Length: 80
Image (cartoon, rainbow, N blue to C red):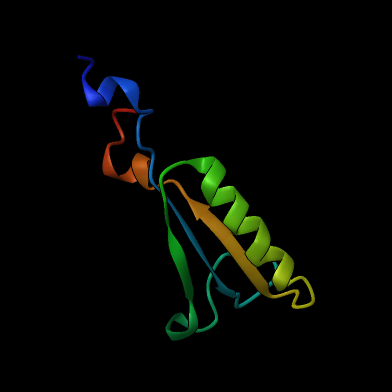
């Protein structure tokens, strides 16, 4: 019987987060209390799908930005 870890793809966690920025050229949020922590996803493709949806919902607000954070790189930087 094959090992479960061999049959599943490696989990590469990604966080989708967004909010209004203090300025158009930076990445500093205007108000940390209002940051939208959308969720954690098992791979980039899943995170991208959610990021794209959230970004399209806020397209009329030039200061609103959503980001994909590669959590797997923060959790295990040697295994990149």
